[in-house]
Image 1 (cartoon, helix red, strand yellow):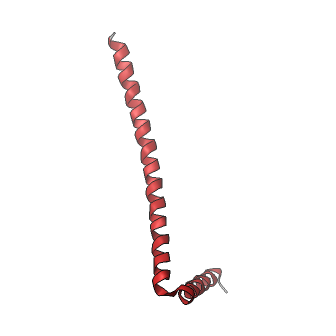
Image 2 (cartoon, rainbow, N blue to C red):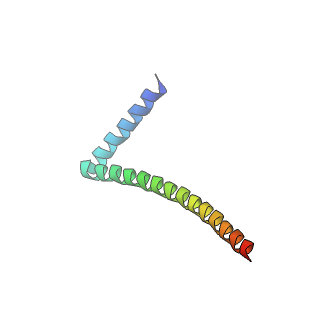
Image 3 (cartoon, rainbow, N blue to C red):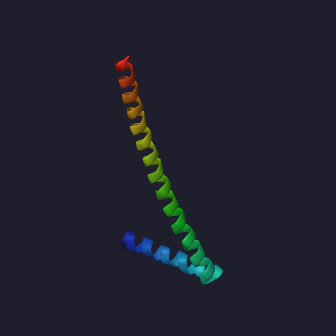
Length: 73
């Protein structure tokens, strides 16, 4: 069998086992939690990239200001 098909069957079996064990409501809550956790991770990743970019831009701006300040004196 194809490994993708086996993976699909495993995921379906895990979801069905979760529904059988804890019911649909709690299983949907678990799926929502996983989705929110993934979204939070993406947001934190983007925020970290933005923080690095802003720090780099600010450092270059400060260096330009210091160079201009020393050039005037």
